[in-house]
Length: 151
Image (cartoon, rainbow, N blue to C red; front, side, top):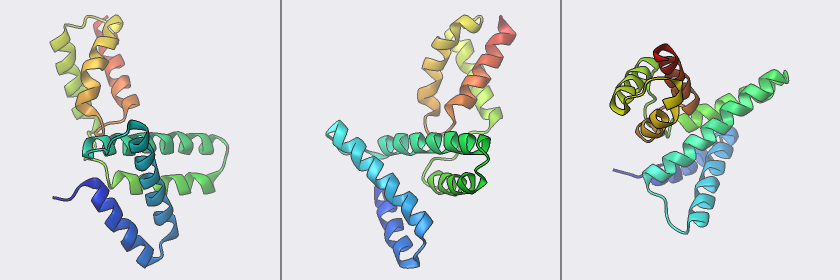
């Protein structure tokens, strides 16, 4: 089984051959961010670490889409959406809202949460389980909604 970094290298080569500039730009930027993270950590990243870098890049793209949308820059929104779609090819399958909510209910029960004041305990337990598989803001919204109904 190939690692995410190996797959990324092969995809960069294939994209260069296909002369797909936008895709190549996104893949090269992702590779540079992985290398920067490795340099700062003074160690090579495994697939889990690479997934964290990809997740952060995807989050940055979502924020850019929102900001450019508010600014009426539809051209940049389209570019960021295309880049986000490319990044998502390298991420694990994403959890849907029902799966997030089911996991949140389970963790709330496990930690014995009784209301909104226990959100930190719940989020601390749930985030490592969903890292790379769900957007943190969606998880936070589900946990908050469930804890509000308890309190």
